[in-house]
Length: 262
Ligand code: PGA
Image (cartoon, rainbow, N blue to C red):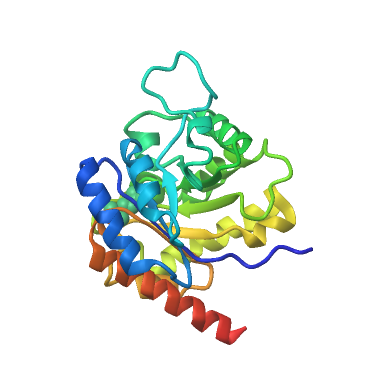
């Protein structure tokens, strides 16, 4: 059976924000606003919130993801969280976010090991890739994205439909209010799709490619109008119910428009 086209996904990366109480309140409000959406909607709260938010989302269509995991199943790794602990609790795990690459010093090699570990525990991986401003100015954006994709995906065998999502997040656009233009984002997402074809084969056509970096209620619709952008990884705006809801509605509208044109 050939893979299905990607289902759009709007994922809210809360980063290191909200107390547990605030997080549960936010999750309830988002569940009430977004349950039954025509696209996939996912919350990625901090680790201490996961069990409580799972309870809030029970019985709704919203997915739950973790912001990271470690590369081993268990052992003497103080402070780390294993994918075995997330299995059954979370649907997805975000790996390779630029804040982990650049603030916490994660290497391509560590991210590749984390990806293998997450797969062992049947977590769908949202792999984030993207260039810094200096890399864009040096005209190396595509080379950087290629390196990040190749190092993470080359060792994977038999990737199946529903196991992987890619998030293209230019580092210079994250948390800065400087969104990539739709044309800039589309250009890199097209490149990513081509590389995925080479690295993964047929299943590549079912892998959603998201854009992330200062996505707001005001710019989401024009980004989703691009044909290779299948949703968004949203940071700051995912902490605001109205803004996140507007972004999800924009993804729903884009998805029905493209279904209509097929
Ligand atoms: P931002 O973050 O929307 O606040 O720019 C996006 C992300 O880091 O995933």
